[in-house]
Length: 331
Image (tube, rainbow, N blue to C red):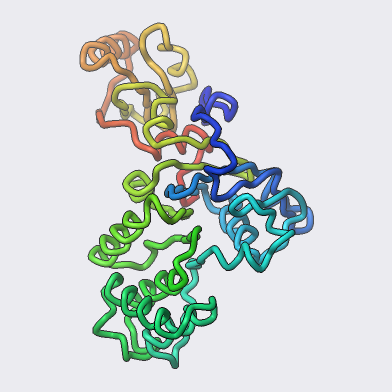
């Protein structure tokens, strides 16, 4: 159920110049045997922006991030970091990025402070600056009281926060966050969200998430991929406009009554867009408001169709995602 939206109809912001770009990806491809995990992906990310990188399970998100971080060699395509091809100056390029993987990767027998200082020194920071950055990050991530605690003694949420902080001691130009909110309690989620927001404008952040609400709150732009290809890249507001202004209406009917005929009842000439039937639920977006809804319900009554439930809400990013991929984010 993908509706009328196509990738060629979506997008729409002016193409940035080379000097505005932190990252440019052209024709990126990666295969695992017969499986094409990433299929000619193109991507341009501006300096200082927060990009939400979304897709259902198996869409190619993590494989793409691993290639962008230099952990996996592409089968084809080109990656430029700060205008420099990754292949031509790998060492310099990789020193400008930070990574917080979805899996928790910490040292169990080092203290939180030791771990942060070690990463800073590994990236070439002077000893005094590495200590300063460690102190800054311990405070920023609410770990200052655990500075002398071993990694293995931390709670799961604290380990997750430390895992994110370990991508930041060298103040990278680009930070890759893979599911940064996973496993966090509400207070920690708010802390991490506020810190990521504080990076806007001076650090480029590319984050994957299964939390659409989080992407709406954090991201300047969103890229939705599926089957290793980009389907849409735009601001959240721009993406939402692709399925029409106004509210989303969902009407539940008695099971078995849709019979494939309802999608032909109303169309754009009536101010109805994003019309879809799934199971016994009819959904459509419209700016027509209560007047149109009353008209729709009247016509359904004339067809002998009895609604058993009715919901009205604002169009969300997940609505667009389902329209594009036919799936929810975790499927």
